[in-house]
Image (cartoon, rainbow, N blue to C red):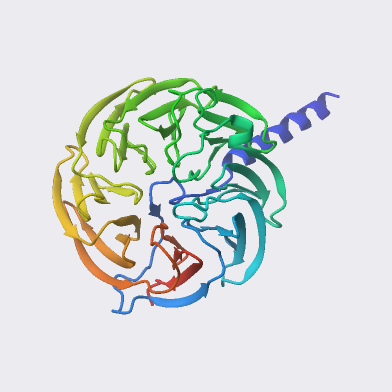
Length: 405
């Protein structure tokens, strides 16, 4: 009996190790920072841009990015008011699509989130409030909940847009109801683990970040007028940081780096640096810079400098991470910033996609071209994976070869 008990304990330890060691594939890279850990990429492009390897042009409407495993590409799209999860192989061949739920079809109709893949499960949302877990091989739905019907979420101005974040055995999302502000579910069953009332405010489209400290794990996300820090173990609200003004669109994922939280909003406090206490229970403001604003294009922090686009003045800014001082501006319209193999990839709302060198207090233009395929607005964040640059433009997913020859 004792031997059998030891076997059970050993198997339990192995299972737990696998659970917490699984790779998470998600929004803006492995840690949601916008960094893609690639090497041997092109350091300049021809005038027409890198070679287009393939295009899949039947995704339906949408602005969400793809997430890519070793064999499969997953991306959401809206067709006839329904949000679907599409699965393609790495050569752009259609494999299957699975319905998620009703999609947002009012202003900027289309899917508006990036799937999150953990092992053989994938977590998605739809713009009208469905949260679902599907199997990666077939698209079969394991479970789903409805933020409006089940958690009484008020309908917002642009549809539910967050890309779900997972940690351990939990998946988190923000209905934005006064009594069900932020929710954690068991990611295998869809059962409620905890509900946090937060500040009782409507959700604000943010895809959350997870901060892992030695003694605590914190979910960081925005509600209508505040940044929230929530203990992932039990849903305790640890702290909040108020936004000035009446804006409710705080989309960019916050970044945690060396004891500090950075965030950038388009209609809140602009760019902000907060110091997080060692136990994660308190924050203090280091600086803020209202001039450097960004609504949904993200930002890159690299070697004590921040690179991002401005929303109001349509410039790309370089900013000192230690002081918040803007050290350089570059005219390239507003848009999205990611990073791979020593270069910034900047994709603006006019469809221009360029690479730039981050040079400490400045950024230098290298190459750019115009994305002419696809439909509607250029909002999706590009992805770099195994030497391929993926650009979602409306109904099209474009794959460009950016490997150095």
